[in-house]
Image 1 (tube, rainbow, N blue to C red):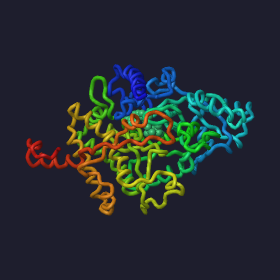
Image 2: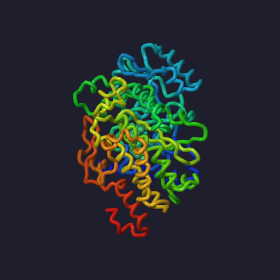
Image 3: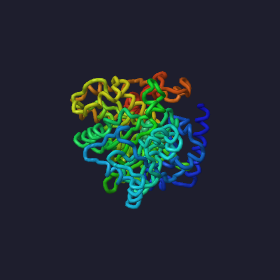
Image 4: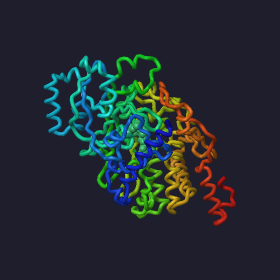
Length: 502
Ligand SMILES: Nc1ncnc2c1ncn2[C@@H]1O[C@H](COP(=O)(O)OP(=O)(O)OP(=O)(O)O)[C@@H](O)[C@H]1O
Ligand SMILES: [Mg+2]
């Protein structure tokens, strides 16, 4: 099965390669975030990241980002008594619909509601991914449709573009409109990509709380948490009641409405998925190197801006509030001005963020239910969301790409990162105990293995998502790079003899 996933990935890679033929880094930089995502290569650490088990070639051609086709969601009316819906303060259902229907689409929707005698007081209108409708909902929820608790309306309204996660769609014509994250029961990059119901109740309030922190805490200036103002989940009438039922069958019908990064950008700013920095052109340097050159800044200064904009706020969220975001290259969006990093947008709040297993007073005002719903983890585990999620899974590849084209060697790269983190720590002396709790400078760091777990557990039904395995420890460049830099300064040309790097 793992080989099947690898072949699926190769099949997708062929189209990605075809799309990339002849395009320059400069041209990629002019694309919108959603369009640029069509050109990307996927998860750098997961060789089988485009396995997409459940999809055939025609499905990929219709729904995968590298084919760039517009996707029109299927809209359904769902009996409110049968589903869970939550919506944040300041939002209402009309605003959600306005984000997905222009005037003509809306008129068609209203005409359809009248024709099918759908009473909006009884029914909630939900988008469904067209593949999901065809392959899962029509068959698995047939009883609900027959009982008129689910009413199919049709595939009209705005067209959408698939982003790298496949299940999150961006409005094709209105980039600032809400994104739709839709359940998709295919196995891709280690998990079935449904939408679980357990976060629905807390989603809007938690995202509003995170937004309030970014707005009020100066150490988070420039960081944005993309709000998830609404979510809906329709449990399957039977699978939901079976203890230990495989999670893929308990997450088949759900939607999360999420802010688009474009709705937060100021004049002169642009945004790109963080993982795009690693994008290496068939001929030429990685996109990060193109940005450095266009910015006119020395690479060390450009990197300092990058780390201040991204790593510092992520680390601050962890240390100040005990909130750990899984900061991989698809969950972060880099905000740029003059080709230079100036901010970060963080996303994916339903399953990709955990809390510390202690009560930090700074997070005492967290809304009811969040602590009870999210995973609470000890500090060393939570730290891995940054150390493994970002340093080992993203920055390692970025430093390698920049070293490969001669822009900056790896140890110099990490010396800049260490210096920015130390500088941040020095400016918050009141948080010394937290920095000791979340220590980023130990000589060794744990090695978390995301690939071998699949070989260990196989592909049979499971009631929960797989957890990655643990390998031997890794040397921590944040520990060694500053020692080597100091040795170099003391004895230029003799750094390797200083024994600073293992
Ligand atoms: N550079 C990348 N780093 C991590 N994941 C990537 C990258 N590029 C593509 N991906 C894909 O994005 C998905 C990341 O999984 P994750 O659970 O964070 O997102 P999601 O919950 O499916 O969607 P979203 O982030 O849109 O809410 C996987 O399907 C993975 O293959
Ligand atoms: Mg994600």
